Amino acid sequence: MKKPKKAASLKYAQNYEAPIVTAAGMGYIADRIIEIAEENKVPVVQNKELANLLVNVDVGDSIPDELYDAVAKVIAYVMDLDSLIE
Image (cartoon, rainbow, N blue to C red; front, side):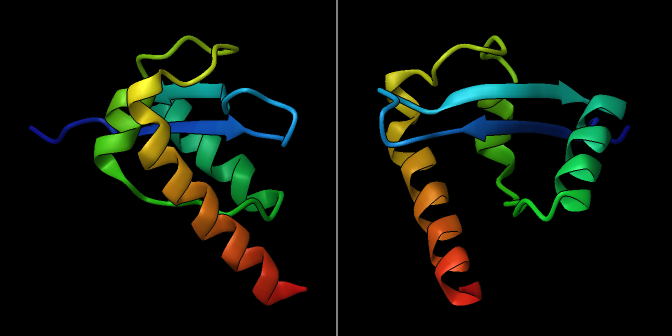
């Protein structure tokens, strides 16, 4: 049996202590998160292991300390993409 797709969206600003989970879900919800991101030209980074962990964080909560390194790498990647576009 195929495992349902999982997805989460994050928000981060320099004045935040840590990134915040703004949406998370599996199956149809995950599909919608990705669809809305693509419609709004928000980069989508595929990382199954990180998605598996982020869907367990309540929406509106900061990411747990143990995910800082993995999420920092995603943010750095997205910032590099942004710098290429500008």
